[in-house]
Structure formats: C-alpha cells, structure tokens
Image 1 (cartoon, one colour):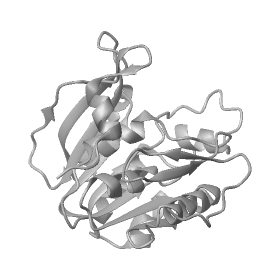
Image 2 (cartoon, one colour):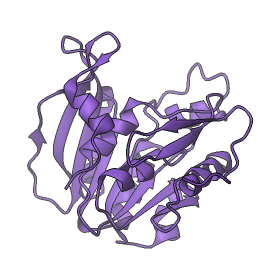
Image 3 (cartoon, one colour):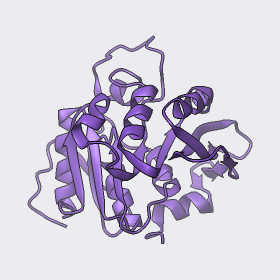
Image 4 (cartoon, helix red, strand yellow):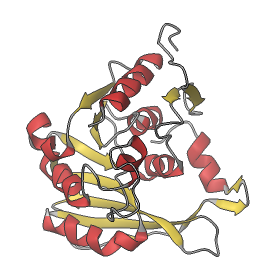
Length: 251
C-alpha cells in the first residue's frame, strides 16, 4: 500500500478485509454499505473478463471485485467530480492503477464514452428511490446516491445494455418494491433476468433488497435463489455474510 497518497481532513481509510485493500471515505458525503458488499459477492466475473461499474461512487465495487475475482480489468463510471477524485486516490493507495480505472462521466452517455459491446460484465448499485418528495438538498452527494436525481433505473439499464457484449451479464442490487419496474425495464432493453435473490435483514423480516442478474440475449428463464439473511442476531452477521465480507476470492 502506498504511503504518499493524500488523505484529506475529515476523511478516513477503511479496511476492506481483502488482499490488504483499503478505501478512502468521507462520512459527510456518502459511505458504502452492505449492499455494495453483497453485490460484489453476487456478481460472477470469470478469468480475463472486463467489468464496468455504473455509478461507482468512491470506487468500492471495482476494488472489491478486483480483490475477489480473476477479471482482467475494472472500470468505474461516476458523475460527481469529488467522488471521482476520492476513488482515484483509493485506487492509487492500493496500487491498482493498472487494473482499475475511474472515469468521470454521465451514465446517460455510457455508450458514447466507452463504445458498444465493450464489457463482459456490468454492475450497478444505483439510486433506489424514485420519488423526490422530502429532499432537503437534491444536489447533495447523499441525495444523488440514494434518489434518482441524476439518473433513473432506465438510464442505468439502457447504458448497461449498450456496452455489454452478446452473452454478457448485468448485476444490480435494488429495492424489492421496484421489482416490476426492474423486470420490465431489463426486458425493454434486451436484458433477460436470469437470477434473483432477496436479501433480508433478519430471517423473519420482509426483504429489504433484491439482487438481480440479467443476460444480454438470454433465453427466458429466471432462477430464484434462497434468501440471503444479513443478521442472525442484532449486530451479529450470519455465516454467509461473514464469508462474503472476509473470504479472499472466488474461482
């Protein structure tokens, strides 16, 4: 790990528990949550594949996926300049400049930025909320991360469909109440849902997230996997969540 990378006032460096990697975060902006971690465990990246993360924030998914898969290269696209700059410093801190790129740009311009059919895998942890009511600061980084202020579900799916190679795979974490929108939008842009997995905070609670895999040009058939439960007791992760956080890699 490099020691000459600037850590600004108010920022912290968090351990990612994988290959010694760390990430720079600013609690006043937006810190990654368990949704990013479980998406990195759900996404399947094969040896030599190229990966794009749409709305990468501070670069958490490209760094996690580089640490746990055998993909050849990882790119993150992010519209907020401050997040781009922070993500690039995290990449440098982990000495991953040859494996991970952070690109500043708009998800609506994904195809124009990268060209068509360029990636084997696209991931996204997009804004979940499509209602604008109650936003005190619509331009703030937390609002942009959580609400469809700068991009919509359709923007994300459309961008993924354009840059995925035939047979490529799209992975996303979202909210169950948007499932109808998700399925319809995926099919609208030629991405066929292949795997669904609901995520529950506790075994007796309704799901709070859904993990989705869709294939470009896939045949109609979806597999609903067993639920993923985060906690077995308050503050105590289940064995599977612990494994996702701490296992070193995957085949």
